[in-house]
Image (cartoon, rainbow, N blue to C red):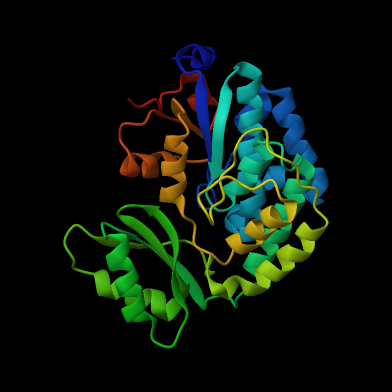
Amino acid sequence: MSVTALAAKYDTVALMFPGQGSQFSGMGMDIARESASARTLIERADRVLGYPLSRVMAGEHGDELNRTVHTQPAVFVHSMALLELLRERCRFSTVVAAGHSLGEYSALCAGGALDFEEALDVVRTRAQAMDEAQPAGTCGMAALIGISKEDTCRIVDDCREDQILEAANFNAPDQVVVSGHLEAVQRVMEAVKGQKRTRAVMLPVSSAFHTSLMASARDTLSDRLESATLRTTAFPVLSNVTAQAYPSSVPEAKRLLMDQVVRPVLWEDCVKTMIQSGAEVFLEIGPGKVLTGLLRRIDRTVHTISISDLESMSSLDGTNS
């Protein structure tokens, strides 16, 4: 199915935007060559940030792309450039949008709540604050796969001891990410070792995202958001904190964005809310296919399309029925 056939086959879509961890070297370079507007968007990002993010995305600066301070702006810019190209090629009606963690800013920008430059500047502030929230090597995150939410919470309680250890992402019925002090996360890894049909995967991050250890990042983000212009969205955008649409109240919307860095991501609940919206197909727009994979763990009957580069946009081979 071609991109131009999207509107003919599906009248309404739900947009999903990925977060940190899906980045890849060379991201965005193919769509920059294909689309003048996507290329201009990436060039605008370089000017806003004051350094060549485009070269970091291209992989010209070694492992710099995997540093939180660069990863979050890169994933945001890539998602927005892909959306720009998709909108050039196809008309479709969005009934709801959501993003995972950082991806929430992509969703808000897609819905018109934030303009591109301001959203990117807020993302930069957020990334720096989250990167600096704890000393390097003291914290971490791990995904527990094949364990129920209830059992995960019990294991977290048993392994916490006198340290910070919290459930950070409720991604699917059988996938929860835990986050906190590194020793506590390692105790969780040991606790699930050997259990049947269960595995724990350490994530390639050195911070405890979406926990109380991000309190300093929340404060920094609060200062930046105070001056941000936030508008009503063109379609409902879901909050990770509530799994419900952002409210029309600007102070309340900003509070949700601040709380997001210290509260767990309720992604499974967000997906269920989007399904209830009546969307006929879910489009994951951004690097990787993480959200498409999670969606299949939540509800395999939903039509999904993952658009992460020019090739996937041209073929839409991610269609799933």
